[in-house]
Length: 234
Image (cartoon, rainbow, N blue to C red):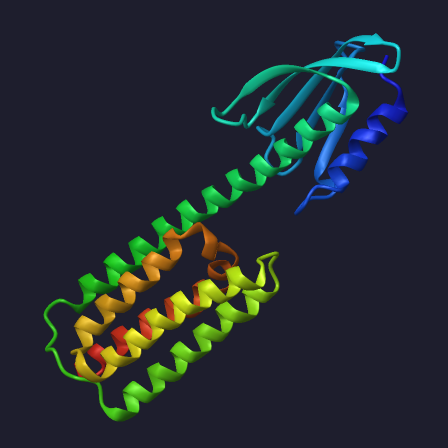
């Protein structure tokens, strides 16, 4: 039977993992194997770390384990010796869960945004191309500034380094400056296509995920607003 102090030591490791706490996981002794422990991510049950104590030499235990996700494949197994090595495997497992969840979210947002973009561009067909008035351009320019502030504020709340934040903001500023210039030089339908392409690029970049989750509604509003500007005379 696995001692409760061992289970607690596993919970401590999970509690120290970035982005997670021990309460995010179930840490339970396997009722069918007194030497085994099953750790499950509570909000997505497929993520499991199953370990078995195989032997103990002095103060050094040995373990076999099976995990989902693995380092390369969706599942993997292995064997380690010593608590420090096991704890490292456990920490790396939580990192892979975080990456998996982020990738799924990025893919889902990409699909949702592509569907919205396709629908908006389809609705634009058949309308005359005109240029933005000064008032319309000023209004959309202000909304782009607000979007930039959304990016900046949320980047500062993440674990990104100062250099990472600076580099991402430089890239975003370049895109937004280009969009602002397009308000003066492009017809409305062309500008909306340009906005749609920029937003899709931001969505497809996993590094932007912390920002896009919060900024998605604003970006969607910009797209909707652009279509309104194109179609309001009709």
